[in-house]
Amino acid sequence: MVKRLFSRFYVGLILLFLYAPIFILIILSFNKSKSRSKWGGFTLDWYHSLFQDSDIMSALYTTLILALLSAVIATIIGTAAALAINSMKKTPRTILLGITNIPMLNADIVTGISLMLIFVALNYTLGFTSVLLAHITFNIPYVILSVMPKLRQLNSHTFEAAQDLGATPAYAFYKVILPDIFPGVLSGFFLAFTMSLDDFVITYFTKGPQINTLSTKIYSEVRKGIKPEIYALSTLMFVTVLILLIFVNRRNTEKNAPLIK
Amino acid sequence: MKRKINFVNIKWLSFPYLLWMAGFIIIPLIMIFFYGLSSEKGNLTIENIKLILDPVNRKALVLSLLLSVISTIICLILAYPLALILNRTKLKSNSFILLIIILPMWMNFLLRTIAWQNILERTGVLNGMLKLLHLPTLNIINTPGAIILGMVYNFLPFMILPIYNVLIKIDQDVVNAARDLGANSLQTFGKIILPLSMPGVLSGITMVFVPSLTTFVISTILGGSKIVLIGNVIEQQFLKLGNWHTGSGLSLVLMIFILFSMAVLSKYDKGSEGDNLW
Image (cartoon, rainbow over all chains, first blue to last red; front, side, top):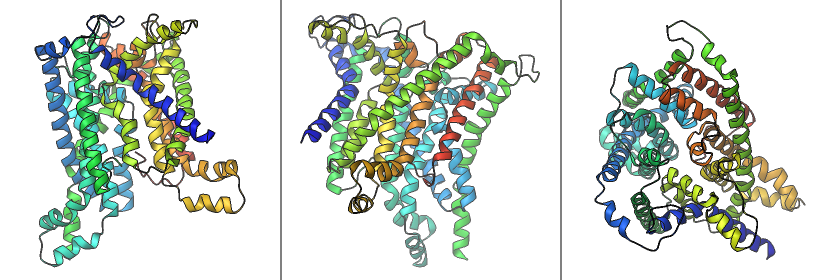
């Protein structure tokens, strides 16, 4: 009993630690005072002015488009690669998976710098497309690592059976393999989307002066003070994701297949 | 015959990926070597790497190593019991637990770190509470302690998840067998659970140690301008001073430390067979 009580207490403490800053940010989004350190009364003003702030809105737009595009492209390239890697012999497979691990295990700062160097060396102007290319690069491994376990569970005979029954490889893939690996593809996509949304370091080095994502915008404001509208925006985003995840989670528990492995 | 043709087809699917990884991972890394090992005139040199011995840079590297080792240890101490408890709650709605741990990551990590500024400041939330309780106030912000806290906070989920993912895969029969053979809880833990969970622990250590070692954001936000980590030095070399050769040279030193830590860890990591623990 004591042990159980202690366990609950411990989990509670860790959750408090993980969520304390989020509560602070949510509270700040309702704070009338522009200063971070004093409470000036309750207001919804920042939620109104947020939508008038073209700087923040364009950063949000860039961030979302970037996350969506990079996740879609990474999912296509990554899924194709996973299919290929899965059919390879041990040695090439190990080498390719090793390469996949590089951007995941390497430091963000090194990945960011190395991409910046290659873009500059190619005389490629830093801007939206350079950031997009960078995001696709670090997203592909997440897709591959999400799809691979599903492929390993796959029964390879069904694919052959479909072809023996006259299906073209493409049709057999669409009808037989894709439905089986789809949960992996989907979780790879969401993982990629999240990683892109949350990335700061690699974007920071590859973005050039013209564009800003939410992360780089926030960073540029650290010294002079964050606009309260940003707190409002991130509260909205957090609540949206929370509702979305609860919804997905509930649907998944019904189907008994967790989205996040 | 048919199958063979098909096999060839499937392997071709890796072509875009190979091209991509060559262009955006391998060649860029070679670029770092190229810049790091050459001078501005283009001569081959190791001067850039030697700059790590410069007192300022050396101090930054040593401090980074120290803070990231401490953070990794704290993360491990906090995460392991939590993973054990989560594993024991026979809730088994796996995705729900992961959801709760991952959810904070959906709020921008810069903002969450800035929120810690609020909590730790001299007139911040924490000191406000301490004052209410008539306890002496703390002065944490802009100290190495604040940076450690920021690292532990940001990277703790990366320690919890791999350990938890290994623990739930441990066959309960093995644990029961140990008990039947007369092992007590402590012995079961030491002889069965701990060794079997090592791949998760090692993966967690890398996932926390590498980003802690190389961060420049956490130190900028929570450490003030006086505390300089090796990440800050490299960032400044590239973006403030425009000194790419020095920056690349120092990055190479950083990569040596990353590779070294991975080599050490993978030596102890047997049999995880490249399964992703994430």
